[in-house]
Length: 116
Length: 236
Image (tube, rainbow over all chains, first blue to last red; front, side, top):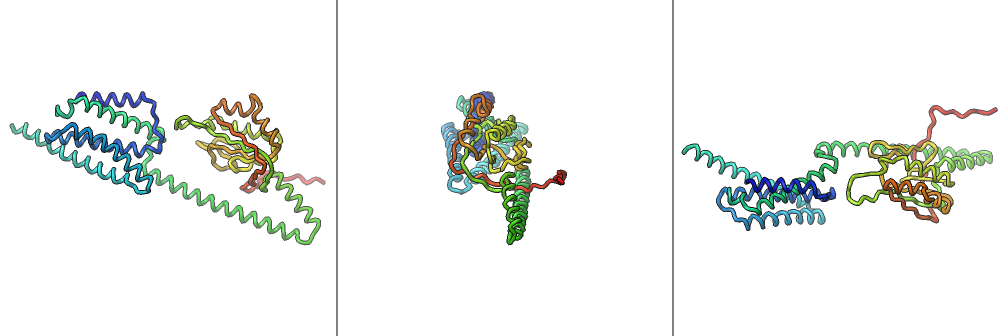
């Protein structure tokens, strides 16, 4: 938990000091990549709670999702198919699903503790 | 939870997410903050309406212009005296910038070469430089000047208005392309003289690009000139 928060803080700090300014035309790709990243993290939390977590799957999924989502969005823009929406839809839906499952598992754990 | 959140890799991945978050936030901030899609729709509507209005006004101008030409040709049909008057009128139109003119001259392109997309626009801080440029060109004997195809006439204004520069009441932004008819050499040297207008522009981060043209077309003034207060004095 501490490592995750530290990592996030480090990332935010680095983001502020690295003078990289994304051209505004690439904002949509960046947002898709961010969405894919968040989806992977939620997926990881869920897998952990279900005791199915595998760091190799998690890491490959994290980078794979980001790359594929960004590439698909870019490719879609090139050929005029809004694949962008497909990515938003997929990742968005899955994020909510994962969150629902996480919530259920945590509630169950609290309940068990309370009943004991 | 330990397995998931206790690994160094997780810290690394969260760092990446942090960087992405900040980058995205900064980019959106640079773009002028959050614009909700509803507000964008409103602006689009406004834009379309203004475009339509502009088109209608242009059509009206053309109609009026046609009416004027009709009257002129009607009057000039059979009278020598009136023919003379028409040629005077044509000359007056030429001098007042109400006809397209062609001839040799220079095109001057003013722009800002941003290294990165930094949102800085030197024209918004030094809009008077455009006026200075027009002044220099006139001093060098320019016979017709247009900026972004807005013909500069005696009532033309060049003025900062919000994030645009108004020329002849219309909004313009960089790059600014001057089309100038006149003696090529004189114009060129008037602009490029040491410590002259080009150097001032460059000192203000504006790039100046000047090209000779053997055949240049400068469009006419597109608006309607009407004086409400000034009346000519009739001499006895």
